[in-house]
Length: 388
Image (cartoon, rainbow, N blue to C red; front, side, top):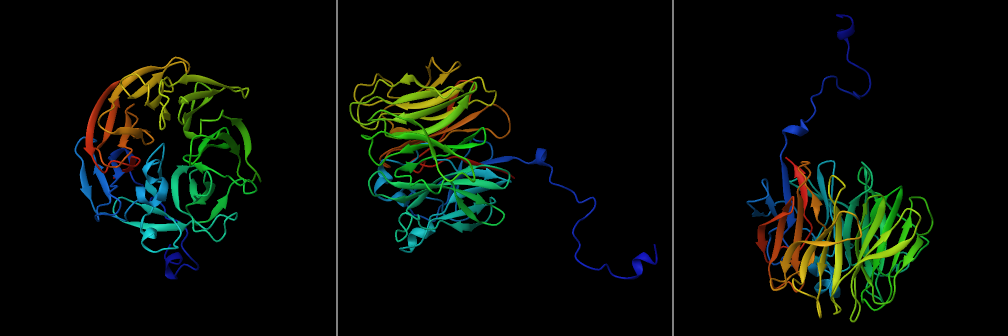
């Protein structure tokens, strides 16, 4: 042993024996929702460790704001938008790029104390001289990869991409790059090795599509095309072996929830009673035990009270009201709800005001008992979490 220790080791040390690892069970989950005041203040997040008492902080960089989405900011605040927690860090769209004209949107990473830019979104190859407008959702794909849905152009029904982001290198790969997606993509969805999207138009009069691809595939496959008037796909989920997708509708059309069975057949399983512009179903979420699927629904122009409600189904075809969201508080849209990371079975919902002038609510669903735990005018983004 004396001889062994008498000279220095050659080369780099590549491992350590008995290095203690973080005890994840000893950490506490901490929630973050973006403070969305369209850059009026330096505030960045609303945060809570118990889900009941919320405070405003200026920690880290300003997350994405409604104004980042340009002309559509008043009609597309948070329909199913989702930001990712991966390897105990939050990945979110930054806002600072809007301070300098011609700057590309950024994916930022936040550890609860500090944040940094991971990468920026290059122009769409189909509009190479146009600066991308914003990022909608960031969704986990693997232990080291994220899916990023971009908003690249306002022309027509919009133009978007889904990018595969390697968090270790910051590199981006466009999925199905040979397909020009001339609409928006609110949220990618992953199941069975496929990345699924539902298109979301700038206007609801045109039909929309559900498509899928896989990393390495050159194109997107169109799996379903809606009737005219169902132009806003707000999100997807899986339930009892089937895929479910929700849509918002244009004037004189009712919003719907559709089911795709394992044999590829699409059918409508719920129809809203509203027919006015902006009536919609979604987003969707499946409970942690897999026994219940939930959907937000907003019915206007002919809808029966309550105009806003959370629906649930235990078989995917019969939907009943689980929560009365009213219709006078401005809670006319829902961000993507999340399952509680502590495996408690809780579901957290963000309801927001479509006009940006009223208050939004953060709801906790505990076995059908809904509690409004935070109500602010800046509640207009997805809920995220870390373990601290």
